[in-house]
Image 1: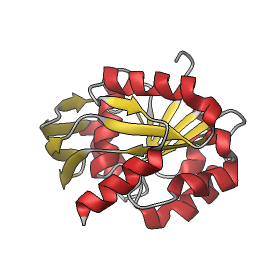
Image 2: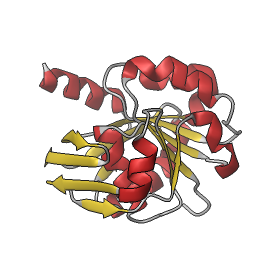
Image 3: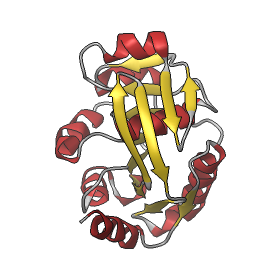
Image 4: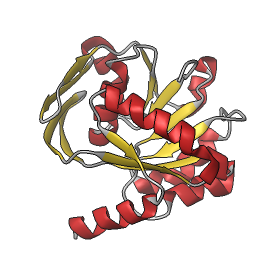
Length: 196
């Protein structure tokens, strides 16, 4: 997975843990979140995750808007915003998306990967079902109550298995055990049912 340039969009509870895990192996990742003041705090204090998952990592790059990541030329985007923000996020992403880039939805809810595929093509669209429970305690401070390993990752396009398996290996190497699966919708449904 050489030459990956990763952006994590949405640095709340789940996105913060995902970003911290990735930053533990690659300090060049850029984080994106529009919340006022968040960037200044995490650039100074880093991300601190405690509990079932534990990370304390510095943050080198932070931008308040997706349009400001163009200089980093990301080719892998993890979207961890609230689901209701997804249409606006995808609109903003059109300005910086380049051919061949991949977009991973880590949202709750159904069909988010389909929205990505409709706008950017099936080859770009991935979906994760995250199986950790986390809560924000303060800016860049997140507590992890549990992690029911593994997370599940799937793609819309069948031809993305190799890349998906490499991405799962990357995430597992960061401490977020992840399994690539053929039918990600099944795991999304299972999670929805468990949350009811």
